[in-house]
Length: 128
Image (cartoon, rainbow, N blue to C red; front, side, top):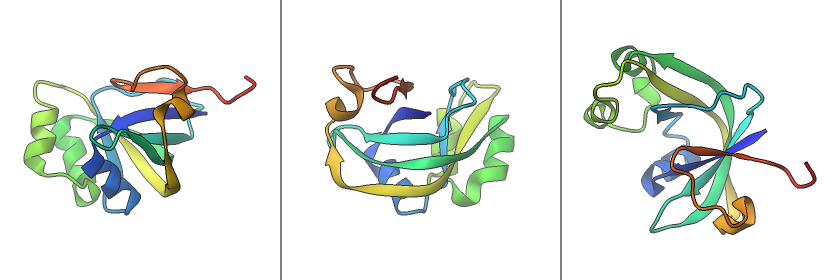
């Protein structure tokens, strides 16, 4: 199963070039069958640019998660701490085997007429 994530273009690029190996979230999907993430790079790009395999999901306090993932975070500690301010739990999706699409796709090619997700959206393969 795949999910679609909206990711800022600079972070999508870092994921695809291998320098950002964790995608941080305040909440994550519950379905354990999720195996890959399709990346929608938000505006001004506004395209589906690639995908990656999920290596697992790590959850901890923000300070604990930063300590575990900081070397491959692709972001600053200040940005991380501001993002998780007033949160007791932080999540990180481990990025494995990122693949950049040869030609970026329109969101409608992947999600139909649905708008870009605020958090995530499960993608249902054709025919299911």
